[in-house]
Length: 430
Ligand SMILES: Nc1ncnc2c1ncn2[C@@H]1O[C@H](COP(=O)(O)OP(=O)(O)OP(=O)(O)O)[C@@H](O)[C@H]1O
Ligand SMILES: [Mg+2]
Image (cartoon, rainbow, N blue to C red; front, side, top):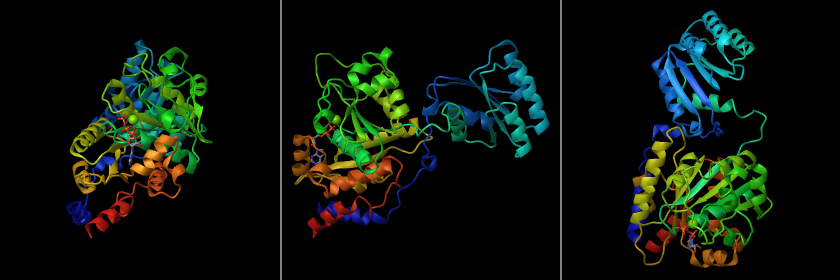
């Protein structure tokens, strides 16, 4: 412990490298539905941006095809074949040529097809002429991956729609590290302190504890939806929710063993799509396992929180998870992580500083091991803030709720959530 405390202090001034991709975007872009997109580019840079956009999680369901040749190639292509849902056209030309090309395209274009133009000319008159011709979006190049993602997804979410649901996935780096406890407390704080309508979704169908933790025993839950995929729509899923507090509902796991729970990779897609359409914030309690569907849920979430205990297996697993998810989500904020059950008496532990070094990122929170209060909460079916309102871990959950919903900057400095832990460690080493 003493060594750990000094180690943390010694490392305090070392900068943690930040990857440029992490600045990518924190903006909330709703995923596009299953649509076909064909791009006709003129430059390799734009072709590369569209290619990367096609690999973004938000276009995971869309089919994106890229050709070179600009408007002329598009006109040629659609003389003999039907047009897709979306055409992206790049044109390096002057205004007149762009408009002329579009007029020719209009002769062969199906009426339902939307057109996005990427051009070089920054001119209001051109913009008006394009709008008059029914072009949905005009992007001035050079364009980046996220510009293309935003433009395509934007076509399918109406601007006056209320904010679509943000999905926050919480997963443990190892079994039993407290991932569900963190997910439930954070979900509760999002509803209670940020007043956002939220649904906690318990994906541990066999053993999930969300029902116990919220003191609920609903007759229906997520199993009713996942085993009747044809019936899933917003109204159906709505009926499966059980209300916990003013703003919080639960999509509970059956926690029964009469059947087994082997799912295909896309088993939860329609449930999440319908939740996302009506609920501002969906917290997924993802069980600690690696299967097609858990991977898909994590990759497609808006934000991820990996919960790790302070030991070597957790460190390795957390790093593997973070590395894989960063690679799979190059245009997203990196996954967050927090440490939990830190400071078990007499247990040698890996320090937050060592985690920060290995994961190249500070933990969002370092939650101490507090068996008394966590045990009481679990056994009473209560949240930490209900057992002890002013408890420091209740404040940590509140802060996690803020960061994960994009309400606050991630405090990745040691002056943030780490302070209570450091104080404790320093007291012990004194
Ligand atoms: N900070 C903490 N201090 C003390 N006990 C904790 C803490 N966090 C969680 N616990 C306890 O640890 C146990 C396991 O927690 P939980 O079920 O949330 O873990 P999990 O990672 O979801 O486990 P599983 O892999 O089974 O899904 C629970 O009894 C919980 O009350
Ligand atoms: Mg769990």
